[in-house]
Length: 435
Image 1 (cartoon, rainbow, N blue to C red):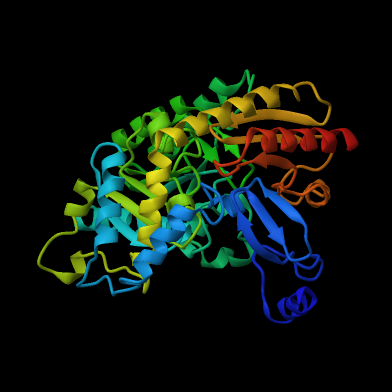
Image 2 (image 1 turned 180 degrees about the horizontal axis):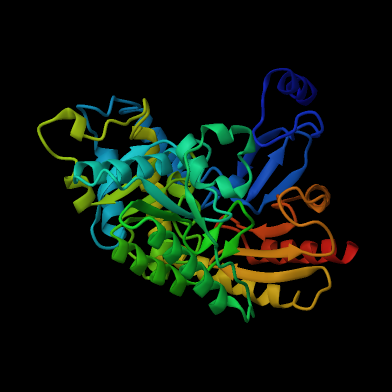
């Protein structure tokens, strides 16, 4: 059966972010539970990247599965123009209660890229509706990744992933991202240089900026690059002075990954727009939201249709996804989950210290449940040859770790045990020694 599936996969399935001409056959997964994936060939993998950062509480979590099943027996889908339903209203209400300040208006879509696309479009039309149509520019940050739709790619063009589609992208101004790590003595200087770069961009085009967009605290796809909360607070002040909207892309950092429920809480910053996806449904179903302040929402009110936000998706606010989101949020906000996230961070910090001074590890860093290090002594960046070698090393030892080039990182589901995390750190140490 496994052989048949693999052959049919090779014949008919086009996998993402994969060079099919050189990649080995994908591993067939039959079932999963907790932090473990069970392959059809009998192997078991410890999922330490939360299956592309979406799984918060473990695979096949019974509370989320039961919530979806109960909702499926009641209402599986309804057009969200002209209609509403309880799961969408309840989830929007609870998100607004948890988010800071005036972030009260929840717009549903279906993945992180579209959540960002929505935010960029909202920012542009907000200024049009306010009579400031000259505000058409955006500032983003070097290395940032915001998704794969055209607007999201434009804001992430500096990541280097989108060369094939450069002709589609609109111009965005990029400032340096002040990536830092444990013991980085140049952190303050890098932050000042980044802020000075933003100021220079603003001086060159005064009054022309619709918004700033940034992944707060952690840039994910570019290598789990971390910035300090103080930088985000200074950036927010510059946005306020310019009058531009501040957009936080919390597609990855939301729902506890940095410790608190949202990175904006850890940073002490209230953005004007926030994009949430990945962990929103606990990894069960596609769902995303863009949450706007009351002021932004109210600028779209009026008697003319062209003043409204004319954007939507067939599965907007899907009831099954919203039911999963409610069940996952219950788990995320529980005291036991908050405590567990702190325990994971403490364990990361304890173990990563043991690699300080290792000849093949540098830029050791931890932010909440995320830990990362750079492997030195070879190429750096996403295309570094060491990445596939490390992935194979980890797979052979039953660990789902997927290095970002020469960056090894841990981003586990919150149900992972201390023993499993220690085992992961032991294997990372072995990998570095073998290199």
